[in-house]
Length: 277
Ligand code: URA
Ligand code: URA
Image (cartoon, rainbow, N blue to C red):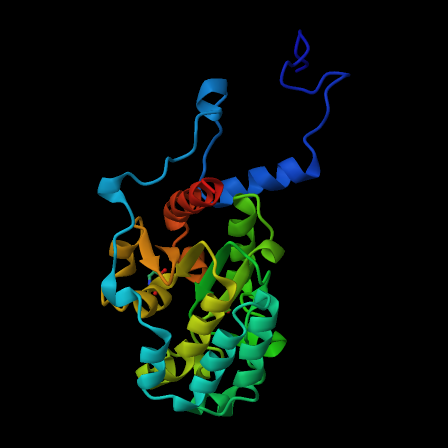
């Protein structure tokens, strides 16, 4: 049946269709569990989440700030030269520092994981990024391509980044572990001890303002805690001069899409810290 009056929802002669970019935005938000956008201009233009008040301010986590050399002392003396070089190069660019750390890693055989890898997955993105994402370890796709977060979980991560109006190229993405564990098993403690100094060095090279630790493995490793990710997320920690925000891993979100809403809340916090300058 034809409507007797023009359908007011249909675009009129002068109306423009949503641009591809806007449509893509709407799709990201839907994906992240954001069900609608308020039409109330005042509400839409309200300031985003304020900086955490002193009561909820970043909780100093003493154990979450290990000195680089403590990690070295834990059993990887060969890394000392890397830290020396990075320290010596503190006036150089972040790109230069990252390149040095990559050279130090070389064709790494420091732990058993090298035996099963195709490609060492170092990290990608903007060396001067204000925002860094840290995952667990490469999976199959990452091992093949040598780039972190390129599989299904990675595609979701890309949309999460775009949901706060950034692109993958704007941020830096790395993992705690640089080589794929066999059958994607959990990394073992000695593998973490051997590999994590390189992540810490990457963080020190980039000096991001915000680090998002994705999933319980990254969050627990960085924060030196056994707490569950569900207890850690929603809070802001201090870590190596940055604010660290734990959130759910995108692979977990693929299995539990109802938790996307929580990740969206965490990402809004990330955005407001970045915007606060
Ligand atoms: N999961 C991770 O933790 N890291 C990757 O690079 C890919 C999947
Ligand atoms: N367990 C994990 O390891 N990561 C998550 O993000 C959620 C549950």
